[in-house]
Length: 303
Image (cartoon, rainbow, N blue to C red; front, side, top):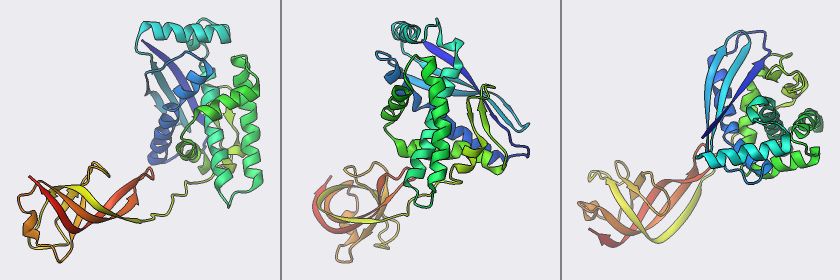
């Protein structure tokens, strides 16, 4: 069973906004929406959302006006009925679809919380920036809390505790707001409700861009690890070689061979156990991944 909820987002920019900015903000909003089931499940105990899908229903270029459809998938009728029962019990209404502004308040609170979290870690940010965003967020939280008959403190705590990856939330929050930062007077309003708004002062207070961490490298030695040979070049010990190290990562990585090793010893070998030195970097999500494997000694050959 599925539950579809419309969300209309309006950026009050007066000038045209590049497509790239709009696309990035939409993808960031989608990523935040995909974190929202954790909040809903915490807010309505007993609820289990199987997945969430996000669709564009309409997009207008006059300023930026986005009409999207958020589809929560519950898996079966029983889970759907349990969710509706939980919502009805707390909100006092028959169907959450009648009140899309509840989801709006949750998403806005997530965006503003993400911005405040990022500013709290940014050494160049001023206390006034964070205070501005938190004041805006307090208004949103009061509205959302009233919809589900919770105290503001409980509503905020549910959202804060339900979001496990706050770094991801913060980065996407900045990208959602980014198009509005092109206009010094712009704000962002959900569902035409002037109270459900990222105010102009908060737009200005949000960071302009995400400061990506420096690409640090780490070196680790392994005395006996399995390598899967994927590419060979008998004419060079530094280029054209590639392996997969299943214990470290599923994607193939460049291999460099110690001059003391005869490359032909690896010919026609699918797997070998070896002593290696691995240089690690990070991917876009800042996950540790191998960048280079330096083969120092073949320990055991596997056919």
